[in-house]
Image (cartoon, rainbow, N blue to C red; front, top):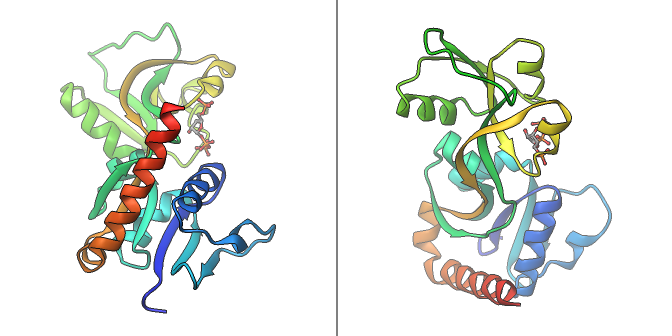
Length: 214
Ligand code: PRP
């Protein structure tokens, strides 16, 4: 099906909300709402094929052209700098990339700061901007544990509601950058299908603006 528009969506609640917008914009794929574990759905009549991808992998599918477009968090785009076009801020999945740690944390600049994170590139670039020497400890999840058990001094992580920090006796210390979901496109596919992808982008943008005004 070379003419299908391939769309990689992040599996989970955000992806479901994003799909609802795509559906309202005219790119419905009803089989996607069926309760099953399939990862790929297509609607030949509408010319769309959706994939449910692990959120952090969407940009890989798009960068390599397995998907024409997709929806990825700005955190992933900043961390991995995939070679894709960022077309639209969907203003969904909003959160903040923060430095967090014990609320009473005071940085001792005579010591190397130990920073635990899933986002080493974001952390490195933030502290380079502060000319602060750091030791990055790359983690895969439950980052909040690191400063509590003495593995790190602080963490660089995503804060959404702030509940995980609060319930573990930690606090956001500094916001690095606000994060939200972005519509991204493969560069070559965008050039090839420019009109189609631009129309989709405009339709989605219009729906988001209308929803924001309500
Ligand atoms: C993310 C993030 C924080 C938490 C923040 O973790 O790493 O731990 O969500 O959300 P909150 O501010 O609403 O509490 P995720 O759920 O992705 O799991 P992880 O620990 O495996 O990274």
